[in-house]
Image (tube, rainbow, N blue to C red; front, side, top):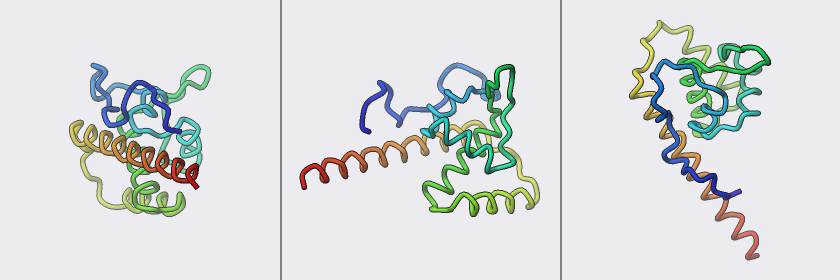
Length: 136
């Protein structure tokens, strides 16, 4: 699973010249966050707050707040060790709290870059584990 796509995950962020408030396709989001498309589709079923815009043919477009929510789900599930149910409850509890202003684009870009960096480390560790298993 250590095949290269030509672009390192550590630099996978929205550096495409689009406005920070632009809608993103599922491909752009998965590339930036290192989350697979089928996982995003499943999360849409599990997290009622995650509702991308769907256009003709079912094509998904994610708003900046959707991307921020996906990054939060990814953090809770993959870094904090939450189950999907626990992550959903934590997010619902946050939404019950007084509204906080949306994070600025810079903070969002940093969280996207950090999530991509963490994914790269996980991929490297998996590759090392596979090599060790082959050695045995």
